[in-house]
Length: 454
Image (cartoon, rainbow, N blue to C red; front, top):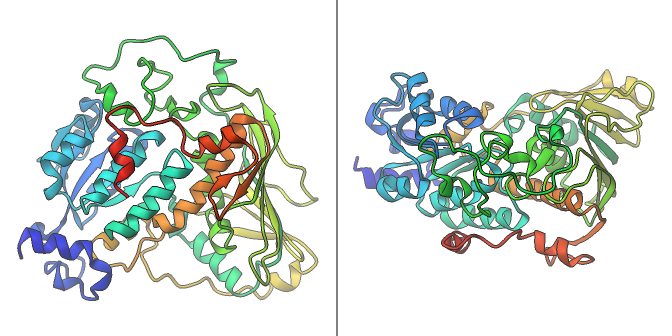
């Protein structure tokens, strides 16, 4: 089978029912080497390295390229994955990698800072490459909008890395909604009460002064579309999440792992009001030390009345709970008319902990839903890219609106003001500055074209 024909078939894998038609070596779990997905790992350290290791270790892949703005990180990744990516070519700029090897790459993982997810994913998708993007999906509301449009336009398989959406937790939640166990939810309290890297920084008055960069770092490729400030270790490695210019704070980090099933199976879409109820140590450059943000959603149909999600981040910023309701430091309580549920994050399931019908319902719980797709998140993505699963569990169509809720929350955290959102016009109607932040800062010169690919 020619490389071109296999690539076209991979792009349109949803329409094909027989894996053998385009992956002839795949039978009983074995894939002929030449028919594996050619994989690129973009971001080779920290979380990027972990998802990259999952991908290169999968039987469906052969790693052909590694990309990291610090090439020694890619070298370190290659050394840890001996025998799995020995022949992979190393790049320090994803644009150069795709220019030189785009026709040789079928799928990629993107484990880079929040602000760089969008341009990397957009370029890959426009070239027909399937993408796995770590959460949050993007850095702004508009970027999510464009990525959802590109997913439709280019017909590629896309997965956001909220692993709980390919787990028993998702199947349990879905089954409990389908069988009427979870209904008439009026309130959800969600918590993220762990310390954040930026908390020890105190009252930040500006961007930090320049420091010596790691040897070989491509700082232009690190900044991508975002404003470029001089290199400082308070940006990289790992500290970018606390800065408005680069990260999405606690929402981007923990929101997808806490509220993805609530959002999807209660059909929440987007809120009409976002309320900044508490802002602890606000700052013009970094996210506050703690916030309470409330999201008000309209009625969606029978059994789905108006409801509110209250988000609490900050070490000691906890909700007031009913007796017997003990929310984990990272977790949630769900309050319906008749039942109260408590759950954690990621793969953690729900427990019924209160309500008038607790004993009655607990004695007759339904079996979990059956999955049409793999229930390992990376496995689901790679099988979808190869046409062996019909879809990605956390496709951009699913993950995009979820992430947009958090992007609205990030704006409320930053401004400390209540916002009115019109879902039809996709605008914030009561605050001009907040409405501008749906798009965020203009892209740096030379990076504008990425916003035109959708």
